[in-house]
Length: 125
Length: 511
Image (cartoon, rainbow over all chains, first blue to last red; front, side):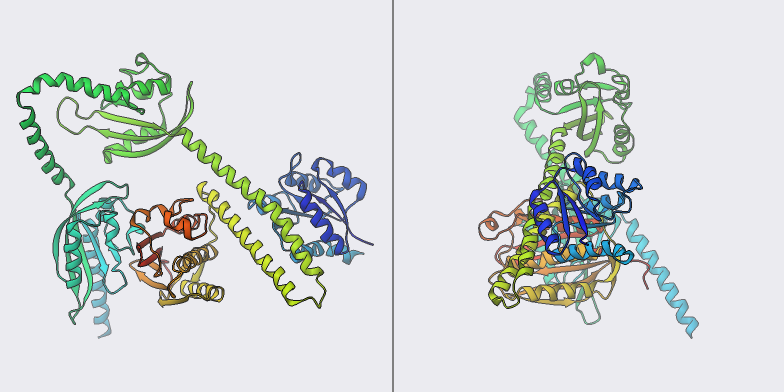
């Protein structure tokens, strides 16, 4: 079974590039440009990992992370936050995200991080 | 025998302490320079020297005394001094020095060499006194004599005219002026003051400044200035204050305050001048917000470009032409370079907002310098980078940030000396500081630019044509060094080259 990864970022350039990268690495990708819709996507698709941008119109990445981690139905899903802001790391961990990667990121570094976040599930299955 | 030695060394230690406190208690500024280190740096300065010069201890140690003369380099006293230093003789001169705030001070300087047993000059001792008042009295006397000769009997008539004339000046200037008596009651204020604060003379004259508009002017900072700062420092310039006023809203000010010291009717009156810098401050904040947002927005497409670029590298077949692989690798290098330029921009807005966070660790300075120089040498083949001297000490600081400073200074040195072959990095200990100097033998920097090059976005005119850059490197470097309680400065002559030096405090309590 392919792992499903949900990407939420308001920049379509990044979404497109990330989708290609993750597809090529063997993942199924669902993408969302409008952060407002993310909770519907989670209910509809049941992703195993969520990659969030921080600064997005509507709902910010840290807000989404905080809500997901506070909800017992979703708090098991690992969250990776990626941002070009230098305060990003602090904000991400404050919002209970599992990992943070600064933009621009190194492609191999991103794939390694994704794999390590999915590792516990690999072991479980 | 051992016991005797112990007693002796204790005694000399006590003596040393005694001498040191005598130096500190002196009202004359006293400095010691080390003639055996390059550029004869100051290694000791007493407290009185800080008061006279207006510089802090950390800003003095490690520098050559010439920094006190600023641009005023052609004064005769300097040549007398230079000759005495060269010949190892003592001398007394009257020097025009400049305080940190730019104010002129006249110093009487007595300089005397210290020689070792072999007769070699190892140190110089400088003792200076502030003779500004004496000089002023001399020139006032001269002016008064002149005036008397010109005016003679006309004097009484012109007194009233004079008063009208002065009043016209005060009413015309675009700055708020208030006069207080010694108990802080308002005696008068100018039109600009009333306009700025939407007040009228009835609201303020005769009242205590703290009671104006039901206490709207009872501001902690103002009390501090009037009751604590001014009695000790008269006149006081550049006191910053912000406050939310009724009607006119939040204002940011820079104040000058002066208490009249001349005996007579006006003695102990206080003059307050308020410059409204609210708009300037707001613009600064706007500019910093802009920089933060711009850096963030620039990084977003850069992320996509970098991602695609690395994806192509991964998709390349194993037997691809080496030139193709190399081309891709190079484009990756320049993407990273662009990213670090954007980081610099962000650093600038960070520093402006006073939000540089240091990640302090303890490390060997000499090792760090050696590592940096080796790394740079592998990237730049046009120059040879030499390390001279050593500090043999650990310092406490943010290693990554300090590396950033050193790399910046060394790369600048190579960049601005395209025709020469070598760049020298000199390490030394000066007093209770370490000093790192980076010297090039290139284009050099005009004296007028020595201060400005540390400002944000400043680029020397000549440089603009021939060298690429956006003018933030040195600004960032200076802020990092300041954040470490050190000082960064430049000594340079156009056509001969530049030496950028910084000092950092020696770590105490390390064995």
